Length: 135
Image (cartoon, rainbow, N blue to C red; front, side):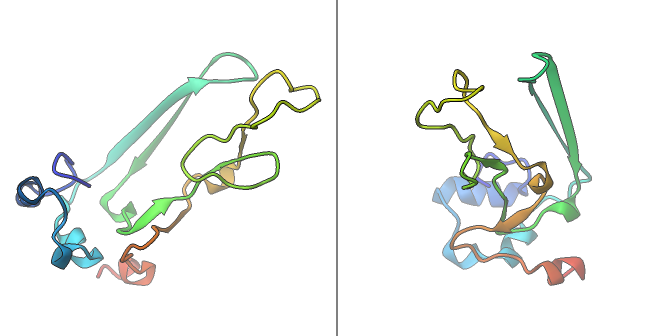
């Protein structure tokens, strides 16, 4: 969230633009939550191409205000062959390995993690229990 984010109230964006960063006193999940616009929904649309069919593929997800958890991030869903997750980036093999796919870059995606979240490193994150109770 920065001074150009449409998710923030105008006064918060102005404050961020003037200071260039979050005020340390306001850098906690309670004050960040208070600075958010209570939006109805945000629709995220993605498109890409299938390595299998070579055709275009699309995905769409709608999030509501209640889906937002302050101080949390989406977990990485992409893995290298060894199973080690690379958060928020596509994973590529560093060397070509013999086998049927040796001529192409291979990415493994665990779709079961698609909407999972985890606390951001060093962040003051919003407890899920408090969020569920509407605090």
